[in-house]
Image 1 (cartoon, rainbow, N blue to C red):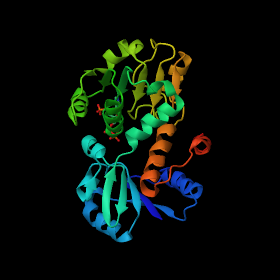
Image 2: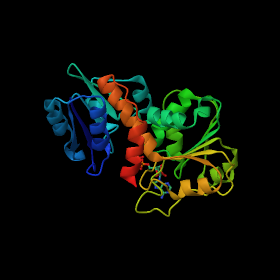
Image 3: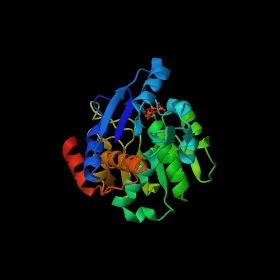
Image 4: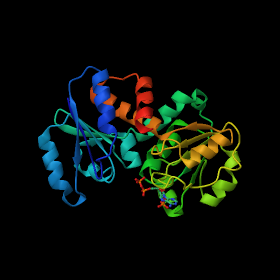
Length: 275
Ligand code: ATR
């Protein structure tokens, strides 16, 4: 089976590491190659990729939207949220999916099964590519209140207005979110703030957080961000970025192969890899 990743930059991607292990675990002979593409010659490189005859590939920054123009069909969820991270080659036709949001929510529920109760009050911080998948999945799979806080409120509004409408969604400033922080069951940090090398940066303070709140950060380098450290010190329960990273890969692998791999051992190995 021939798999790969397109994006730029991708040299340090962990996807080859993860998918090589998934292939091994599923007993499938195959490879997962990196295709670093230049945004300026996207079309030429897509033609090249077609000739490569991949069975499936992942798509990352900055091509998650652009790839949609090169696909034969797009799964409804991916179309609604306007981004594709997984492409399957089905008898020569490229079909696009998005496993980011599903990977996020399922990794969260695997760790905290009580979140399967749909009536949760959630705060999403950020409105970039990663936030979109998470927002749309939460919107579809939960019924409680969702607040979105982003530095640029216009982007939060765009994210909120894309796809099907839902009540109980509200836009806040970062300061407003900080002052209401005690209200939430679930807080999800989706921005790049706190990522290596800026490990001391933190998007908002969690000083007034309620004990037992679940706090998630999609940043996985470092594994323990300042945001998560403060959450833990305040008695909150945490969910780390590598958990989403692994699950979105597991779901992509399932789309390509039909095989759902048991991921708990791999999660531990990934944790070691990132330490
Ligand atoms: P991607 O699509 O890869 O997620 P992005 O679209 O640039 O990247 O989104 C990054 C997110 O991090 C956005 O929510 C961004 O806020 P803006 O929409 O206001 O740009 C947020 N972000 C990045 N750096 C930030 C900073 N220093 N302070 C606050 N938010 C920041």
